[in-house]
Image 1 (cartoon, rainbow, N blue to C red):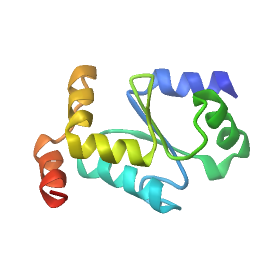
Image 2: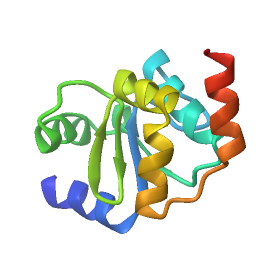
Image 3: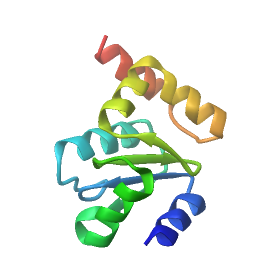
Image 4: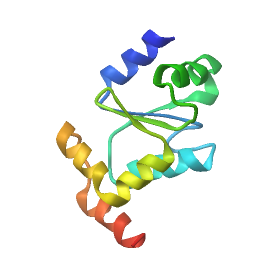
Length: 117
């Protein structure tokens, strides 16, 4: 399972391990992170951990992080819902995307911050 997970996050720029899918999230935390990425226009791969118990356990062991969702950018573990939310509001997520060469809508990111100011 570790090899499958490693291959997925190495082959794709942005991967979100989540409960459900980007169009049909199955929990509030997954919904929030997918919503941020969708709103910012980030092209990402969603992996539904509910579809495969091996993946659900495997990703927790792979990252040594106990919760879902888990966001990976260019092979690097970023964090879960709280961390992604904080990074979005502080502008750190924009900086990470800029540094890693990931396309996103800067205006949309600014709108999220304005709405939460």
